[in-house]
Image 1: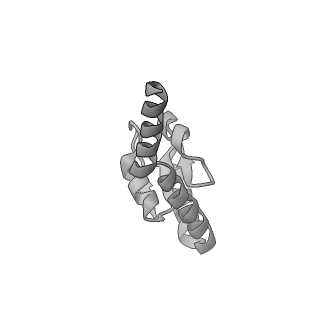
Image 2: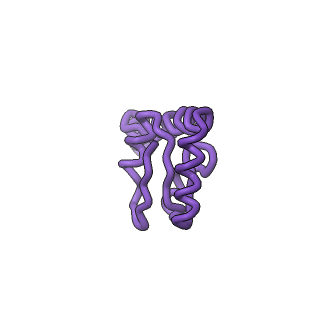
Image 3: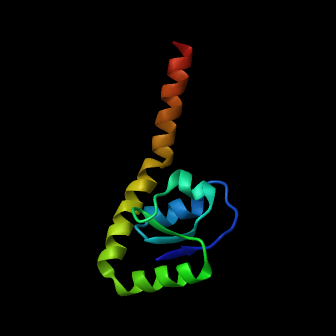
Amino acid sequence: MFFFPTKEENQGIVVLEAMACGKPCVLRDIPVFREYFSDGHDCILCETRGEMVDALERLAADPELRARLGENARETAAAHSLDRVGEELVATYEELLA
């Protein structure tokens, strides 16, 4: 598991690194994470300390939930990989130059 209760973040590169390793993530529910990650799909987003404790306890007790979130997290990280971003940039530059 990866627990990241930060209150401020720009994109969450450290979260993407954990996701690339297939780690189920428990994150603070802040706007930037809602842009990139989906609660219950590739992470668990929490607002309060109590929700965070509950999420960590649920993950510790449920190997299937850990596996599902971890696999989905790996897919999310792949969608934001440097190779993928590079491909998008090349396509944008080619479109602009055409």
